[in-house]
Structures are given as C-alpha cells and as structure tokens.
Image (cartoon, rainbow, N blue to C red; front, side, top):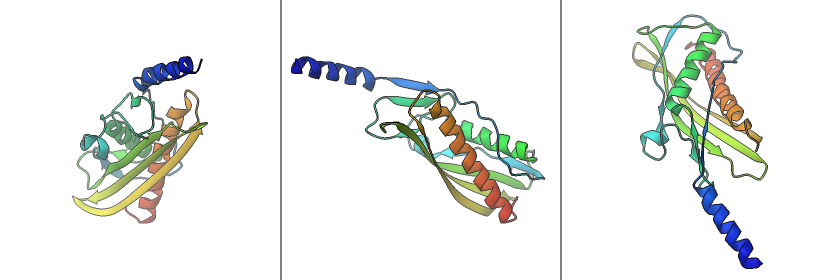
Length: 179
C-alpha cells in the first residue's frame, strides 16, 4: 500500500511539474487621481525578461512552485498600457513629442502560488518623469497583494497590484510637482 501511494505521488508530481497556465489580464483603470496636461508614455522594460530569466509574458516565481504561469500579454506591454489607461482616466492627454515623458523599469513582477490557502503578487517598479530629455523625478514603488487560492483571483490580484503601483506613482509625482 505504501509503495502504491508513493508511486501515485511521484506520478502526480511529474504531471503537475509540466503544467502551465496562461492568465488573461484585461486591465481597467480605476485610480482616484485627477490631473491635466499633456504627457507621453515610453515603453516600460521588464528586467527579468531582459536578462533572459523568464519569458516576456512570465512572472518570476517561487522556485518551489510547480508549473509555470504566463500572462496573455508581455508584461512590459501590459504595464505600459496600464499606465497609459490610468493617465487618460485621470484626465491627462497622451501626446507624443511633448516635454513631459513617463518611463520606467519593472524591477520585479513576482507571482507566488505556493502557499496553502493564498497566492501573492509582488511588483516593484521604478518610475521616471523626464522633461525635455532630463530626468526630473524618479521613484521606486512596490505593491504586495494576496488573494485566495482559487481560480480567477490571481488575475484580480495582478490587476490590483499594478493599479496600486500606478496610483501611488501619480500621487508622488503630483506631490513633487512633476505632473
């Protein structure tokens, strides 16, 4: 009986190890910050993908995790588009070639689903505001979100963490008078 149980555990582990999932992320803006003026948004870069540690649409993960998680879009594109949506939602006009530009680096985009009853997402982004090509503001923003370990909650945690990063950036940049 013991060997049958061990065999079953080994087989299940092998099957789960090869599992992967692609999560569709449909980002909707939701921040409470309002602003005016014209800004341009440059493409944000995802450090882990640029270093070749993960695929462009793959969050970093806990090494103990079984299987891989992928997002329906590349993380750089997802985040850049989310910043554009939040700025537009806040009242900013998005225009190329204006003096004020926003860019950044996604330093960490980590998804951990190893916990017993929860899963978590950690995002660390360094935002930059430039004026006529000169960096006038830089801020590293972090967000940590946890969600129940059930289907559908992972996408909500990801969207919530992205939203929190962007909203905190907008508040900080406006507080410093750079937006």
